[in-house]
Amino acid sequence: MTLPTVLQIPSHMTYAKALGPAHTTPEVASPTLRIADLLAQPRWDFDIVHLHSLELVTLDDLIQLRKRTVAEGVRLVATIHDLVPNIEANVGDFLTKVAYIAAEADHVFTLTPQAAEQIAALAPHAEPAEITPHGAAISIESIPAVPVRGSGGLAVFGAFRPYRELEILVRSWQHLGDERPNLRVLLRSVTRADQERDAALLDLLEETARTDPRLHLTVAHTMLGDDDLVDWLTGASALVLPYSHITHSGQLELARDIGLPVIAPDIASLHGQLTTGPRKHLPVAWFALDSLTVDDFPTCLRHASELAMDTADRSSATATEDQEHVRAVRLAERAEISERHADVYANLLTKTGERV
Image (cartoon, rainbow, N blue to C red):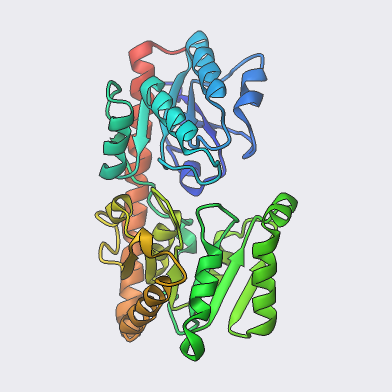
């Protein structure tokens, strides 16, 4: 039997790379391939399009994509990670796209029961989204042999995003006074547009790093590889997720993989990420979204520091056993996720007949 050919868009995500390699023929696509570029291709030589992001895609793009998949006899699968945009400013427009793709795709995956409920509310007449988590946030090979947590202070990383409140974090950390721990900040994938749009925030970070040796700033213009990111986090005492809104966090999964305590917003779908898989009881200091202010967030940071101290005294033997367990669980989880996607792909082709 000929394996189905699946075009993953975008194709660079860690979990997307691992989907069904034994059961499908992945179509090689540039990580920057846009829907408009795909629509411009005169011939499609694949069976399934699996869309992994609605960011920076217009509703018209999605409508035209659906028309083309129907005309070509190609099936459309979507994974809906987020129910609030990470990059786009207009939440209403984003939710319109979520509702459209939830109703129109041949199969929809999402990551937690809470997200599935929200999708059902947005598209009440659509088939329910299937709940299938992403699994490991980094390659299994990059999961360290021992937890990375130590006494190196709080860490925060990511690209400039409107939902990542770095200024509130830094000013709150400064309010801790002389007792404040080190704060390590990694800005990655920083573009010229980011530097222009977020110049004031970048100036604040750079000036603080110059005048306060307890703030360590790293600016990278590319994504860091998994091993490099783990190295950067090694020795940190807790990972801070200063999100003003979020549905799903790959950083929360990363913390589970490397054994690092987290301070995260008290969001139902984030709690839902911790109900299965390794480290269901990952040490997390949950903060209410309305406490993400300079007046209230210092208290949350103190809690995170205390949490890190409470979890730092485990024996090295126990810590190594923990990491071996994480690797084993993640390997089995990845195989299960891959098998489930392969089943969905195969069933979609069986229902419609293979494309000629």
